[in-house]
Length: 130
Image: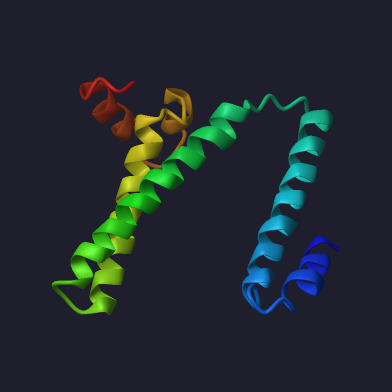
């Protein structure tokens, strides 16, 4: 319903156009996320801190976005745009992973449960991050 309402209201506005559909998708997913998190918190007493699951990932996304944008601008001036885009995306992935680690979004125990997590933890301990 949220997406439908956004589409019906925003898409016909000439200044917004098809971008209204994208905003509708974002709003729809935000509502679905809110419902899912609320249900989880009630049914299994899930303890999710707003900082760890919202604020820190948003900060990581902002850092990634800024870095990828400026790396694309720099690279597109010296190479083909398609190649600059691919390299900027690779840089974005690396920057996001580094930001998630630097912001300590995951605990040491959570990292250890990932594939190769024990090795990653050893590296992070040597770097004095965890």
